[in-house]
Length: 488
Image 1 (tube, rainbow, N blue to C red):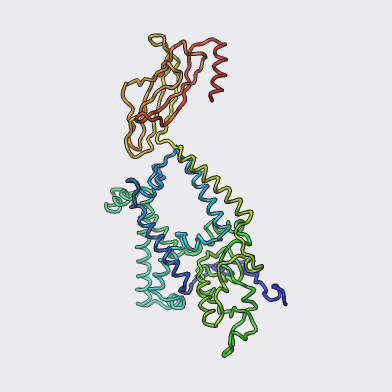
Image 2: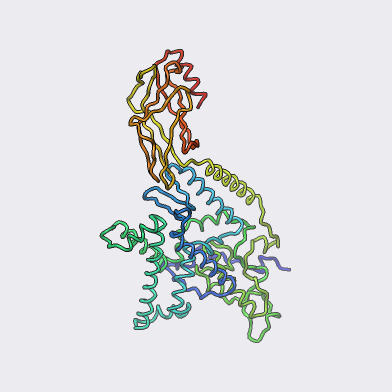
């Protein structure tokens, strides 16, 4: 029996160029054939769900707060109704790292399925904008003819209608994207008032609209091929056990066309009849028969096209299918590998750390600093006092009242200079000046660590430390330093 290399001569020339650029470096416009089939119908269902969630997201409320808000301008983030502020940067960083590790693990196991089924770029391009193109201009051959035809009434109205719809949808996407950044109500206010009322917001919306229109009307698949870094990561993430859209070369080669009136069952070549429909339907213009490539987004259009041909010629489906290299070459299906186990361990560890940080996260952030340039003062009744600036950050969406009490030393007390209670506004900051007073006999060093508890409705919600300066001898100062280091 001939070896795989003798039967299938791999075409390595595709590695020297990309399908969307010619030898002179000029753009080659891709006209993919209109897809159809089982996987395409599944993608439509997934797309309807995800895009419905995307457009409804800014209006979905959890405990009165948006499902997702990424307000980088005011440094305010809301995720699943929970507010996060700059003080929670560590939590956000751990969340992002956990998400990236999940994507890496998902890619190692299932390849680039994210790109074809869940990425907003692909969903909008293939399932919205290109659908409009098919509806107005027709399938790939009709689009080619229309673009080559001289200027005419038909060409003008079709192009005008298509690009008008493109602009309207880009406007809708830009308003939705803006709602995720500044909130739904703020976006509605910008859209419902004159541009003069909020020129910055209006310019931002127009810039977003221009970017989306440019990407989906002109840039298209180049965003996946030339810009997206995730595609580049495939080279280091994919392994021979990764499940990707793959061509079964053992079954398909040597490829050859069917002769007229020749039954497929007696043909002297493999199951691939070289119809090139898998190439014609590809939105990035590649030939999947050359193997896994950077440009492939696992959209499965080639699977549907090939399965349809196989049914017509009486061959079993699956010549192009979801499979790994080892599953085709060695008939070994293996998902759990050392690399998968390693990434899974890291993901579980990060998820555990994130859960712990979220569980121990306080709704109030307290900062206490000694007023710069001040020394201790001798107060009445034998007390020594220090002056402090205290700041409370309220991370919740409602006003809260707090009490601050000195936990140690036992005889110390905390007093506001103005005597007012601590009331922190919703999503706001309370700043105050406080005295900390300690009986002189309880000071055992030049510096004493004071522990302060922050209480809400009698419940301890935060603890902070402050350094207290007092008059003591050198020996006492040495002892206080040792106690301070032990406490820290």
